[in-house]
Length: 413
Image (cartoon, rainbow, N blue to C red; front, side):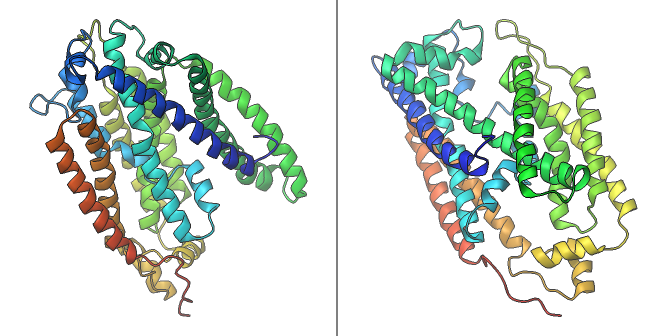
């Protein structure tokens, strides 16, 4: 990663993704076939002492509003804010495509792979592990335990390599992305401006090695992957609101983002200390306060960055006008900039983009749930999900035909 840069990351990721998918899908097929023997999949699952009916339900029991239900609603309606602006490593790949149209379809294909192709092999192996290892103390040990139980020596080696590939794929991407921040946004403009390109390349390689060591130390201190996800989710969701708003409101400025980041860090760490999750004992008495922590952090972040925005941005500056001239964003949030510059927005208006987002979300969710219904032999529910997915795909195709990729008409003077 340090020597090859972006090309090395992209080419190795392609091989690593293929290897990881072959390993995880192969394991899932073997486990699913073995689990379906004898009395059948449902009967074998229900015979496990660790199995509960809620494991196979996407929706929790909404009649009893508890911390589980609240957390589910937060995941569905709020937590995605942190990912909505686009992650830096995803933006890296999108900017490397040949055209805007290529970037659009590349990200759509990524969404299908990320939310449909990749999770189901993990879900199958994880659910079935309740039957084969009902007394397993550490749930994160279930996947390697299933590998050890079901795979022969040769395939077991491929599976271990696929896990390393998945880890390395994530690691090299984030290292490359992080170093690009350090060099392009800090070192070059503020520390050593005006140097030759080879100087920045050499420093970036050194920074990547140092960043690798920092990541190694942080990894060794993590006890559970889920805890790390929740910890980062607090900050991402608090910052996510301002990251979304900056596209649709000209007033959003660097002070808006700085105040949102600072508030999320302070409030997020505070609520993490004051409202820790309570571990369940033998499956009883656990409390998950992640949803409550998230809502508090987002509310605090919005209550700070919105007033800061109103106080620090009274009229459109040159940067806001230059950004609008490049992006030609529609919607009421940029109406004043359109009036002052005389530049009309691009044809893609906010309503069309919102419709595409809703249809794409419905397509992904219907496919994700529908695959599970078919795998669990719930045919009617699976067919309903398939119909929703087909209708969403047709609607998305119609909406996509109206998009103006690479809109390059010269703006009026």
